Structure formats: structure tokens, C-alpha cells
Length: 182
Image 1 (tube, rainbow, N blue to C red):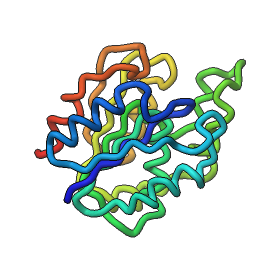
Image 2 (tube, rainbow, N blue to C red):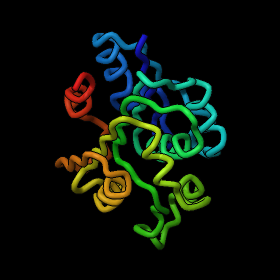
Image 3 (spheres, rainbow, N blue to C red):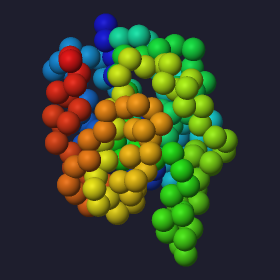
Image 4 (cartoon, one colour):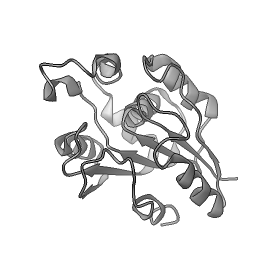
């Protein structure tokens, strides 16, 4: 059976945003879909979040979908994995310390180690999926579009920049689902 894992963002849970709607959409497409509540969502630890993905045991027919901090979690998982997945969707993707965009607040300190612990092994990440899609908003208030552009360039991924400022609190699910069976 094909499976999908949706990894939510920082300070969220599985019932926030669009996660349950996407889970239902994937189930309608024949996937076994999971949206786990990530541990310590307010003060996350990268190793614990990556372990949740690892414990899912993604396989070659499976899909990984991440939103915001979930994207960086998936990238960290893929660079450690020895198992290729089918498709990866990175929604509001970033791979850098976002505090550089908010230099006076340090608001995002709790999540900086996900992106800054060490440089990403882009070659290894790219070897662990068949297709990757990066979807960022042009005017996201938390993740500048440049971050998504950078991730897409590093991965050779399909990039879609969409209008919006709400950090994908809502999303047109067809941005993901039209690529599921392609």
C-alpha cells in the first residue's frame, strides 16, 4: 500500500491548518495517510522530529509532505536515510536560520538548529526521492520566498510560488494532489 506522512510546522499540531483535509484527500486517492503530532512542538528538538519520520519507515512508493519546520525536518531525514521515497512536497520551505530576516527579535530561536546544525548534504537528499516539489508564497510573513527558491535550486526541485501572506494557513490542495499520480 502507498503511504503518506504529513509533518506539521512549529508550534502546531495535527489538527491545525490544512493537515486533516490533505490526509482525507490522500486517503481518497488510495493512500494510507498519517499526520502525527510532533513532539514538543513549541520547543522542538530536531532529533526527535526526525525520529518520527524515521519511525514511519518511508518506502519507495511513499510521499512525504512537510509544512514550514516540517520541510526542514524532512530534509534532515532524507540526508540520513538509506531509503528512497517517491515524492516530497515542501510547503513554505526553508533551509537557513530565519532569524536573519527578523534580526531584532530572535523570535525563531527555538527552531534554528534544524537549519543551522550543519550544512545540508544536498546530494544525499536528492538521491533519496524520485520527485520533489517546493511550494512557497510570494509574500509569506514567516518564510521569505527566497528561502523556497534556494531550496528548490539546491534540490533541482519543481518550484511553485503562489500569492499569499498567511504562511499557508490555508492552501489549495490541488497544488499537492495534482502531482500525486503524475
